[in-house]
Image 1 (spheres, helix red, strand yellow):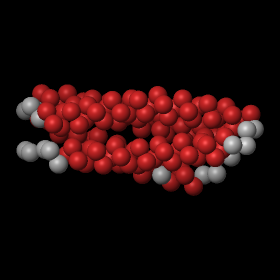
Image 2 (cartoon, one colour):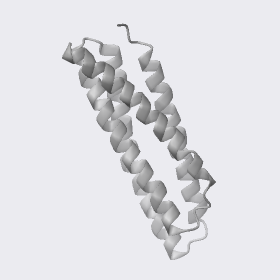
Image 3 (cartoon, one colour):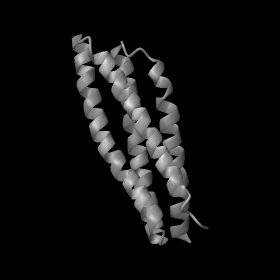
Length: 139
C-alpha cells in the first residue's frame, strides 16, 4: 500500500512541478533581460524547478519500480536523468552568458534569451513525456 501511495503521489507531484516549470518560465520570456537581476531571477527559477523535478522523478521512478510498473519507472527515470543533464547544461550556459552580459557584450542578451527559450521548450518536452508516461498507469 505504501509503495502504491509513493508511486501515485510522486507521479502527481512530478506532473504538477513540470506544469509549474512550463507555466513559470514561459512568462519570463517577456523580460528584456537587460538588467543583471533579470538573468539571475530566470536562472534561479530554472535551478529550483530542475531540482524539484529531478527529486520527484527519482521518487516516482522508485515508487513505480516497487509497484512493478516498469514502463512508467523507465519513463520517470529518463525524466530524472534528462533533468539532471539539463540542469548542468542550462545553468552553465546561463552563468557564462550572465558574466558576458555584465561585461557589456552586445550579443550576450540575445544568446541568453535563446537559451531561456530553449529551456522552456525542453520543459514542455519533459511535460509531454510525463503525460505520455501517465497514460501507462493502471490502478
